Length: 169
Image (cartoon, rainbow, N blue to C red; front, side, top):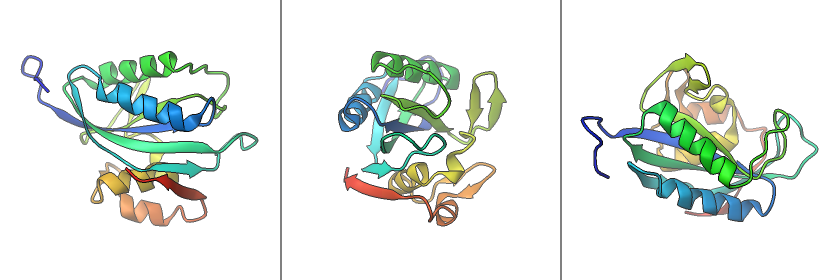
């Protein structure tokens, strides 16, 4: 990955989820699109997991994964790229926690902590979600979520959430 100007490469972790229109296909397609992002390189991807929906529970199960990117894109630029991938994959935002073809969440960007218009890092609810923590721990076991703690300890508090590994990376 060539550096753009003097911008150093950053470590970003992206959460993926889908429960509509062939979710396995949607997640695999999204991983390919993430790997093709400009000024970025896919470092690692987790296994694929099946999880029960949270919030609006009267909907199909989700397929989830996490990817690790190295990127020189700034956080807002990376977020815009994620939203564009969602759009290309048919994401329509109807109501919070609605079924979706694709959901891409910027979970972590280095150790950055921010709460700005449209961007909160680390992702505000990631530390409460087994479908984020388990795949994140798989690809970076010693991962620390700024302001929350080690993923391993946070995952121990999510044992009541149903999560099934369906495909190893």
